[in-house]
Picture 1 (tube, rainbow, N blue to C red):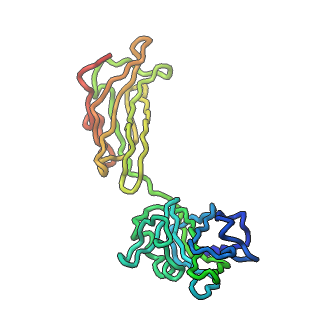
Picture 2 (picture 1 turned 180 degrees about the horizontal axis):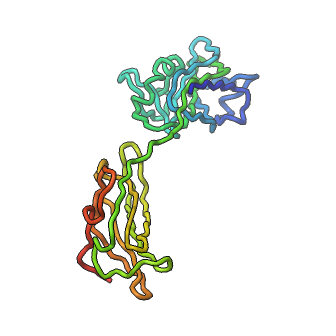
Amino acid sequence: MSYSDLITYNSATALSFDNTLVQISGVALTLLPPFTLTNPVVTSQHQNTISALTSFSEVSTLPAFTAIQYQLVLNALPFWYNALNASWESSDGSFSQSNDAATINAQAALVFSQLNLITSQFLGLNIFLSTTNVLNAPILTSNTIGYSWVNSNATALNQCLITGYLADLAGGYPVPTLVRPIQFLVSCDHGFFHGTRFVEPFTKVFNFNSLGYLSASVIETATPGVKLNFSVTYYDGQSLKSTKLFNAIVPNQAQINLSNLSATVPYDFG
């Protein structure tokens, strides 16, 4: 969906600036006499959540030798359009690495693609009030930000159904019960990217049923090429023991037998 946000500068409490240099005069943002030549910056904690920037404009009064320039602050980092390189780039936060409203509007459609932004962003502004003549000051009445927003409804990762019997791994396991279940653990001790999706470190636990049968749906990791950790826990008398299986990549297919995916490690350190 498309949205338009009108920002009016009528309250100093919504902004952060040096009040010895900048003021709210009536319903506008401007410099405080005597007008400084230091290009003071004005910021705000207000942010828009955007999936793309579509337009940017200002209502202002710009006497001779004055200017109003901006940096786009995306997820707390400032950016500007570098005309020399014809691209959006990180800004050092200085006035020299900022743009006027017309430039931002002309290059708005390129923000996400040129900065390689793959997720929605929090957008704020750094505003610079500039004059090179101590007799003149710029006046900013409002900004209008046009943007679009798309819900981040990520598609589910493909799952592989891991099936099999305890006997596929080794003999001699006790019969699982509700009180003393035999469990299959799948984990990864580090995060990884699955395409554009980030998978956090995780552990999933699945129970073998009373017949010693397992049915476990696990994300495929053939796409990122990441091996997962597998183990089986069971009770030996009163003690809970764990048997390690070899790490393996879960294939990108509908189903695989446990014995074809991994095998028990042939040693036990206790």
